[in-house]
Amino acid sequence: MLRGGVLLTAILAIAIAIALSSIFIVDEREKALVLQFGQIKQVKTEPGLGFKIPLIQEVVRYDGRILSLDTPEIEITPSDDRRLVVDAFTRYRIGHQDEDIVQFRQAVGPGGVRFAEDRLSSILIDEIRAVLGAAGVTSNTILSPERAELMNRIRANADAEASALGLDVVDVRLKQTNLPEQNLAATFDRMRAEREREATDERARGAEAAQRVQAQADRTVVEIVSEANREAEIVRGEADAERNSIFADAYGADEDFFRFYRSLAAYERALQGQNSTFVITPDSEFFEFLDGAGMEPAGTAAN
Image 1 (tube, rainbow, N blue to C red):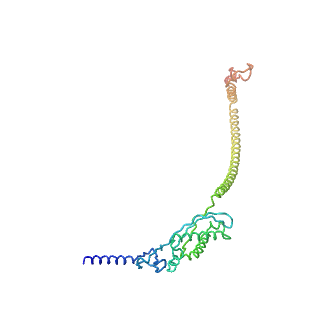
Image 2: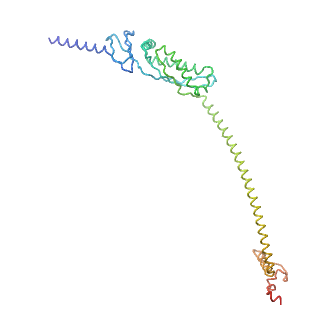
Image 3: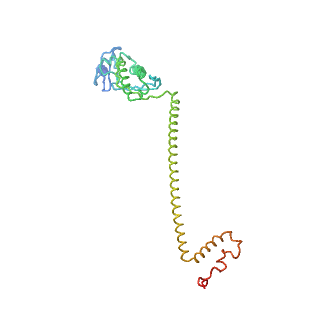
C-alpha cells in the first residue's frame, strides 16, 4: 500500500512537471516561435500563455520592441570628389506580422538577432555609399537641410532589402559627417590662412580709417590754433592800442610825470640781471632823474 502511494506521488509529480513544461508565457515585449525539430509549428505574437509539446518542441523568443543598430564609420566620395567619413544609426524591429516572424527565422536561422544585425549593417553601408555617392549629391548637399531627404532615401532602400530578412527599418540617421583624418590638417590650414587674410584686410581697413581720423584731427587742431592765434593777435593789437591811448592821455595830462615814469621804466629794464654796468657820459639825458636835475618842482622851474 505504501509502495503504491509513493508510485502514485511520483506519477503525479511527473505529470505536473510535464504539464508545466508544456506551458510558456509570452510578455508584451516579445514574439515567440514554437519549433519542433527545427520546423516552425506555432507563431506567438500576442502576449499571454502558450502551449507546446514537452521535450519535443522548444520556444524561441525574439525582442518585439524597436531596436537600435550603429554602423561603423565608412568613407564615401560624393560627386564633388570631396571625401567624407560618415556613420549612422538605424531603428528597426523584427516584423510584427506572423509571416514576418516566420520569414525572419527562415532567413537568419539559429544565428538570431546577431546574424540579422550583421546583414542589416551591410545593407545600410551599401545604401549609404549608393545614395551619398550618387550623381548630383555633393558634400554641401550632405551638410545642408537636404540631408533629411537623403536619410529618408537610405531608409526606404534599406527597408526594401531588409524585408527579405523579416525586418522593418523604421528610421535611419546620419550621426556625423567629417573629413578624413589625413585631410583635416590641410583643411584647417586653409581655413586658418583664409581667416588670417580676412584679419589682415580688416587691420588694413582699420589703419586706413585711423589715418583719416588722425588727418582730420590734425587739420582741426591747426584750424583751431590758427583761429586762436588770429583772435589773440586781434586782442593783443586792441590792447596795445588801448595802452597807447592811455599813455597818450597820461602824457597829455602831465608831460613831466609821464616823462619821469618812462625814465623809471627804462632804468628798470636796463638795470636788471647781470647788465648793471654802463659806459655813458655824465651829462647824458639818461641820468636826467638820477642826478636830481630833473626832479625840480614844477613851480621852481617856472620861477
